[in-house]
Length: 591
Image 1 (tube, rainbow, N blue to C red):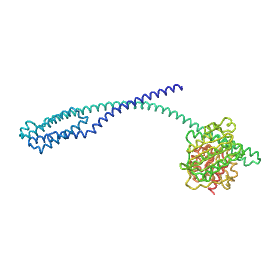
Image 2 (cartoon, rainbow, N blue to C red):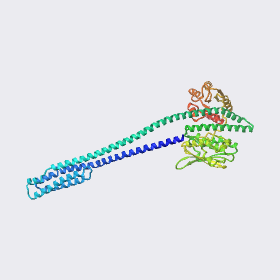
Image 3 (cartoon, helix red, strand yellow):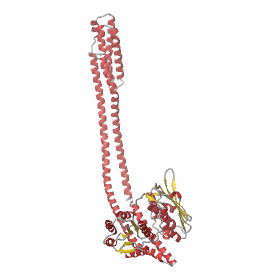
Image 4 (cartoon, rainbow, N blue to C red):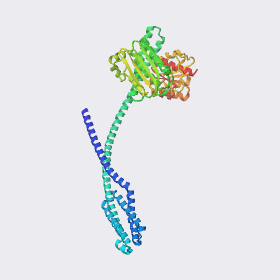
């Protein structure tokens, strides 16, 4: 198979080379003949005006009104004082013109020789006439000897003109012949190239059709894969929500320290499983080139707080420190994609914590500005197991880790760092790593961000405690009984009145009847889904607060829910802190 492809490729190169050489040769030939034509026409056009002027002056000087006219008057009036100088000037002018005409190809030497003989005869007669006048001969006697007549001059001019025309016709025929040759060769070369283009166009069309079919299949496969991953994500997140929610509720109510530790480890395992699901979904979007970067205002304080909240418990369980420092010059508001930047910092921090068993992890965020660009440098320094040079070379490759023992000991899909590099590339940044085995690793990221010109936004300092919603009514639309139990337990501490329904239609009916203060709406429900239910509610009330509870947490999904009319989105598995944060935001708006 490979040998056959190589032969075809070699033949293609050979045929292409022959065709290109032939085309270039024909083009060179046509250019050569065109140059001959151009040179001849150039010579003719450059000299035509001068030659025409000389020719006209010759006719005037040699004709009856010039030299012959003055010679005739000299013979009749026998007045050398008046006409001798004029005749001599005419002769000088005629000789000068003939000398100049010899420099041009339009006039051959023979025609000029004949003309000069006639002029010489006239000149001889002129001197004879002067001699006879000096001897006091009569005009009749002088004219009988000199025979002043323009017939020889006219005959010489006619012959001269005929020979010039013949020469011009010969030159014109040569130009036409060269032009025909150049035109024929030109047509051959153009025809050859058109034929080649036609053949390659035909092949290109065939290749494009084949490529289009393959692309359609690939898109169908990619769409099927995306749908499958989205469905799997939803199906995994739904039961995981029950597990994580139950564990969070239990953790808050357990009194025995050992049980709290067991629950904490179980929650860690759930979150680790959730991170794997997120990695797979993100990588799928990156492969499909559907991942987009936003440009909104944010602060690194918010990102640092979120990363610390996610990773501090894990660091504490391993008895290592986690420190995040933001330099003063990086505390301003920036423009970028806070979600993707948080993901980069979280991936690097999570990776560092995972491979560190003593010492700790230090995250440094610093503003960088020079003459060429402005941005932020993020360094994640750990004192973990480090990496060899071989491992460093594969650090950012997908599905790879240092060796199989790493996967068995620390787990992971091998996608985290590949996704991180892709995100950094999408944000036009750079990422690099330095590591020493047994001593630790430093990963450095540079993101070309711009500072916001607006004042730094106020930070939300809410500690995500259970909000007090006494006197408020919350309508919860959830069809899964386990999730209902978990949400009920999570909301119990809010002291709000809770109403539960199992589908979107019941949610719409209950909204119309009880007029709740807040609605928590699942998306995928029987009879009527959460999106349709939200649209129905918005037809009645634009101001009604509605928060989506969903396992569909892709960026496009969240954007779609917000466009539908949801005020906020809380993803499943539900993080108790995120739910309380959303409720606190609602309470602050409706005090």
